Picture 1 (tube, rainbow, N blue to C red):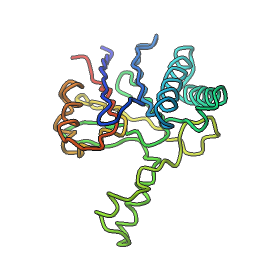
Picture 2: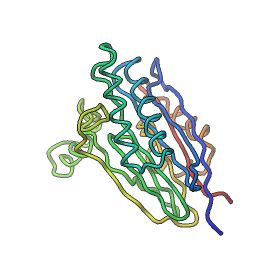
Picture 3: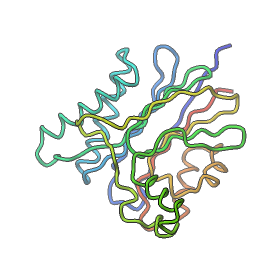
Picture 4: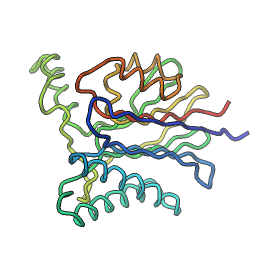
Length: 235
């Protein structure tokens, strides 16, 4: 019998005065489930517009028969056109992570720093690349050139090296993976990072609203927008 998947998602603006994340979850004609999360940048108007444009364009492209690369291309173009149409939106952009699951396989594509996690066999692992400066800064810690505390609070840590803005994309992460029988997938915005991997692993079986409540319970004064979409097998 073919494995079927279900998903649920939710979000919270955290301690921010506005929500710049967008997400959608759809079941496609081939039976696969597609989740897309975008985290906007560019201020209240720009960030929310960019993320919504990116998600809607991505979904539309795939629903019309395109692949994940087609979705990313159309998302990038949509954000670029949107920025050109209104001068106050100049410079807006978004991260984007899309995951499509069917049977025992997941495929993904991403730009930016929004994380995509696999929870399986009692372990958690991030599957996609981080296109912020954080990996480079952490590499300095590994080489003994920076303390872990200084790295955590480094002012450039969350600076993006790539985003969906309408410009040619040079950093795109693509991948696929076979999934075990107990696999769960979490497609998130970077507000989830208030939880450690161990904390997130412990909460991964909970409903999305309770995972988000767990993030808020950490009570970070600067808590970013949080979006979580969870994919799991239909039992």
